[in-house]
Amino acid sequence: MKKIKLVLIALPLLVACSKSVYTPSHSYPGDPLKEGVPNMTVNFYLDYSHSDEPIYTMRWYMLKPLGEIPEKAKLTDANAADPLYNKFLGYSEYSSSIGDNIWDFENDYKQSNVLNLYGIWVSASETEVNE
Image: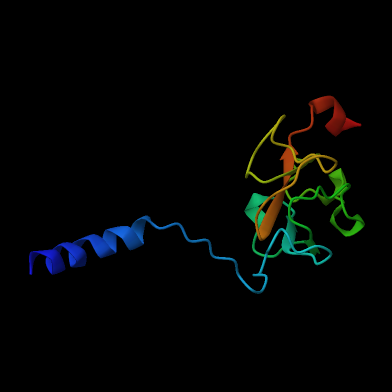
């Protein structure tokens, strides 16, 4: 009887310690290993305050830099929603960022199913405003 109890106690421990590897038979949405199929959605927003609707949405490849700003997502100073912040710096994943957090389209990439990029705007100097 003691041997049966010992086996019943030890069996779950042995099963839990066994190493098993699960390999899915089909790819899953956003699978970074599935070649040739865009597996990420990239949303471009005017800025963080206007993030209800993206100005442009596209499908892209996870872990691959975009290379350049898509033509439909290009912003200029004329697109500014706030006259006090009328100088476009670039896009960022963050609501406000200057410097290192500006998205580098040549080198930056993301491992995620969705990438949201927000326009970053700063106040132009007084001399630029008067020109």
